[in-house]
Image (tube, rainbow over all chains, first blue to last red; front, side):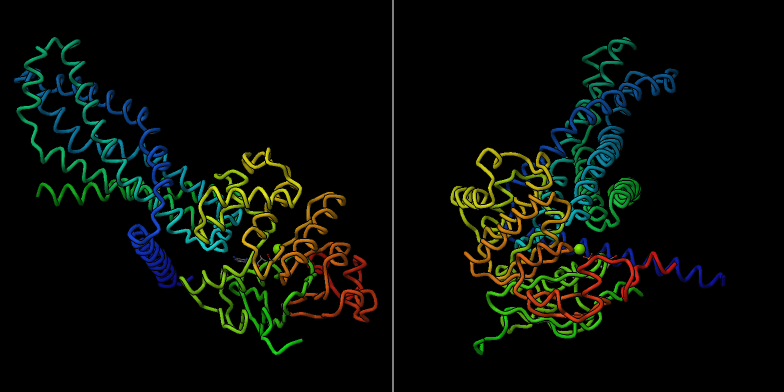
Amino acid sequence: MNPLAIVGRVVLGFLNTAGKLSIFTGQAVSSCFAPPVYLRLIGRQLLAIGYYSLPVVGLTAIFTGAVLALQIYIGSSRFNAESTVAFIVVIAITRELGPVLAGLMVGGRVGAAMAAELGTMRVTEQIDALVTLQTNPMKYLVAPRLIAATIAMPLLVAIADIIGVMGGYLVSVNKLDFNAATYLKNTFDVLEADDVVSGLIKAAVFGFIIALMGCYHGFNSSGGAQGVGRATTNAVVSGLILILVANYIMTDLFFA
Amino acid sequence: MSNDPPKLLLDDVHKAFGPKVVLNGLNLTLHKGESIVVIGGSGTGKSVMLKCVLGLLRPDAGRIQVDGEDVVGMGGGKRDRVLRKFGMLFQNAALFDSLSVWENVAFGLVEGAGMAREEAREISLDKLRRVGLGPDVAELSPAALSGGMRKRVGLARAIATEPEIIFFDEPTTGLDPIMGDVINHLIVECVRDLGASTITITHDMSSARTIAHRVAMLYKGRILWIGPADRIDDSGNPYVEQFIHGRADGPIQMEVLKT
Ligand SMILES: Nc1ncnc2c1ncn2[C@@H]1O[C@H](COP(=O)(O)OP(=O)(O)O)[C@@H](O)[C@H]1O
Ligand SMILES: [Mg+2]
């Protein structure tokens, strides 16, 4: 085959997907701001996305904070270990690891669940049934998930920040024999509002990305059980990659 | 017949998916209070025809009118107003599995017509009773129901808003003959009581005979034959003859036999 034709096909395929995704995003976002607002459904999604992700996110955070403390101690023991450990743990957790790791964990958990649920609704014609019952599936299915994920992620990350710092603290005080009061003082001395706020903004964006990918792939799935499986995989993979890309772009913007 | 426009008019409707032509100049007229049964082999585009009318698929060409109003390409609030006239029983019932049975039946009343939940619940229990399901079933999840019960819940949901036009897509497929007959009679009753106009898709000839005023046969994207239900046995059309007697040989060649 002509190599130009292959390049052309790949470019066209990419543009086609990008276009479809842009249109979907536009419709999804505008449906978040138009009545009716399904509070009951938003509540249910908040529970599914936020509350039920707490164990996963909490465990991730506590072990990450703990391992950070160990690693930094090993790397910095020759210098002023006691303040370096506290400093790096809190900055790394609030700025980067809290939002990113929570995003990856929730992205796997929630992105897959959304794509599977909406994909099944698509292939079993439940989405068509919604339309015939005069209900806009964008407003009924997509908007509540987008809204709930965008609200729930910053809340989850705020909790993850606290638990992550606590993980570092527990290791530092119990295993590395740091002074507890000094460790806390060092932590709060370096911490600035911007560190936390930038992390929470990232979290909100990640939440939006997760729900958008889950809904987009679920909504556009076709071809029975296999199609739903494909949609689920694509939702998770594209969601996680977009989180990492968005994270780089936002870090560049915030701290440049 | 009066001078009113027909409830539903399909005029030279075309629909293809990529290279695959499904509807190829389909014409069909449904009058007020009439019950048309559409027969035809699997994959001939019967469901696609209904989805084009409901706006779930957009025809490539042709005209579709509901009460004399063009509906192709209609969107938003206008389409919702037209859809309010319709009820649809999907081929596999398409019940919402995140909602209970009664919430499924009440869905069009609550979300479509904006009725209060309590009132909608009463109506939904009443519709469920009409299709032979008691209040104990109302709280169950659709996942807990048998195939026949799912079809009946789907039927209750289709008639809950008392629509003027109802589509039944293969209402008896996959059911035992007795349950099939129960559903057929439910459809006849519902239609009589509501005065609705209906299109029913089926492969089941006893179902067609029970329900239909007119029978139409869809073949290769067009209506090949349409006539009164009592003429189906002497249609004089070899395609119809072959179909209603279920013979493998005749003018209709199944794709499997050709390859
Ligand atoms: N959304 C779709 N995309 C692509 N092809 C479709 C779609 N819907 C239906 N088809 C094709 O159209 C043909 C007719 O389908 P359908 O109307 O469901 O048949 P049936 O007469 O059994 O109801 C089938 O070959 C099917 O593969
Ligand atoms: Mg069909």
